[in-house]
Length: 427
Image (spheres, rainbow, N blue to C red):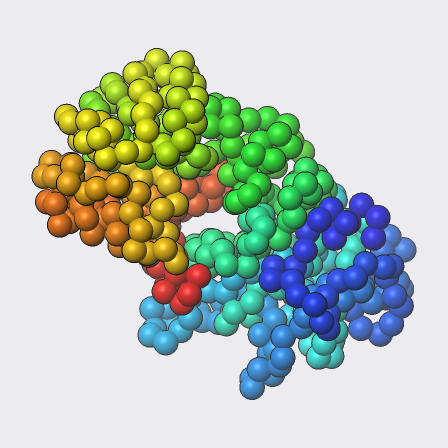
């Protein structure tokens, strides 16, 4: 499929060897799976298998699609699942597989006609096949359905499909969010593919934020300042790169009751997440000084120099040692952990060499959300400081992307509940 997304590096989320995994090749004629070419409905060909097809469930659905299994009258009933993670490359087989053409038109594979194990179809030279895995079925997916998603590698673990699809369902929107596994080096071609297919936009997760930054046509000030793009919106054929982590962090602080930030803040880490936090703090009203502590002094120094120049605020670098932490926290009202130390599975680790500099009057914000209460947060509680977890930053950065794509106000509470349930389920 020359020019198609499989050749652009997009692979099924959770790809593995075995039946149904894409091996390349041309379209094959056959009864099942339909490709509507420009010649009309007479072109019925079977696409090469793109992924493993799930076994048919007891209700005969095969677990193959996304869509509301409940009507408004059922909303809120216990025992009903909230969402399914949508994996691009996972074929939407049976009830309504959405395939969008470069002109923005959509093709929907008819329901019920394909036998068990049949791969889905494809339009023309560039399209992705998606099957949301999970309890929802594709009864609500139509030819008019708009598509957004997330690209990363790996990406099967992402809880964003549950969060966004539940928000679409709550608002009765004809949209679907899917996960695209894109290998490093293929981000530019993948983004060109979503533009050609009429996909409205995508979130970008690790390890692609830097590559996405260099692959878009335009970048917002937040993206320029952080050097990273975590959200792409297709605007009149142009790829616009945003960084919604900045907004997400600011809104998370407001939800934590920090409408007025302290004059001095301490930031642990100097990586991608730290850049977004540093820019958010450096442009926030009330903050005058930010101390950046990192195990590698040179990286802390580079980040401090750059953000000081960009924001006009005072940024000071330092090593992440016990003495430096104690000195930095003198007079500080906010400590932010933007390192990965303490993240699952290393749940007993803390980024602080010692917790004894923590105390009353200090807010400790840990960007980590798995586990929901990190070792650092426990240390803060024990020392009388106030601890806040990173879940809300994830919710609000997603809510901002939702608004950018749809123009609608996001149902934040719905998104938070869906995310919490997805994480409890093992995401």
